[in-house]
Length: 400
Image (cartoon, rainbow, N blue to C red; front, side, top):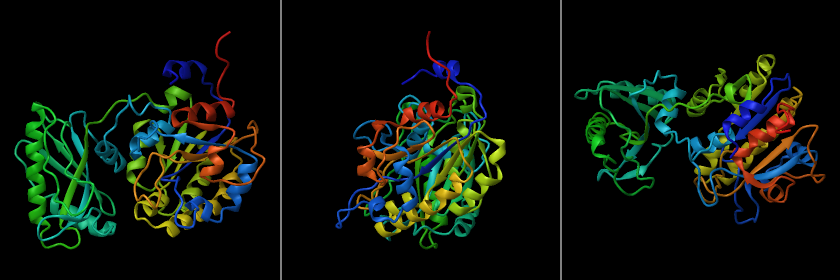
């Protein structure tokens, strides 16, 4: 990767504007029809734009590694996801606007459905509505633990945030989420001797939560994962001389944006609302990260048709973004979430880059197969920021 000092030296402040649209879980695999979700979807705008753009396929971390959302996005922003490891808990806490202290330990918490034997039968509790989440969070806020403060915050739907505050806490603890159904939640275990007390506190919290939620359905248990403290990263504006903004509905992605120093804009619930927010704030920023979540959710649910419909909705929004006349428009994803796989996967993700300076493909069509054959080829996602800055004419020449 290019050292950050090089970006600091080459980056130049200019009036040109960049829009990076991240379609969470964009990439897919063929179903029985032999087509991926992108190939099955009717996407005339993206297909036509592809002919006037350069295409490629990005690898989030490394060949064969399925990225989580954190590392997947950090790579898109130019941060080495192997060097800068950010726990899910910290991102979730920052995403809901929690003032995470340097010694706090934050965890992502899922409400889940457990059977009478205590086995997990739904890791997402039927995707309960956010209103139900808030009611259950109020119950969990009554939990008290020895020598540590407990904070519980609603994130969205079945997701919540747990934060422990106290002296000597460690984030070197394991998850309780078994990542599959038909088995009980795992106990929290310390990864180092110093983490034993934190593990004990978390196991106490889980037991108390189970008791409080016993009469609830479908959310009668909790799963914890991604214990983390707040990391310190160089900021986006410092590295690239940009004035960046983020538009995202889901809190975790707002947390990622805050972590790297983007201003997070308030927006509505729909993807159309996000485009409206982009339009309203167009004059204030020169870099926009716009995050669309629903394709990933459909992929995780194994719903091929729904993911294709989401991609069609995004396609209908693309002309509205282009009407703002960004100097550089890019569309890609943080990882693939094939509906047939029902999870994040390691497959390369389609990437489209449009500017006056591209070598155009000349052939309509935006899909996984078209991307792999594209002008940009297969390349690490961490290189995207260099391409965006260069096409926006925001980089000076390197060397004599």
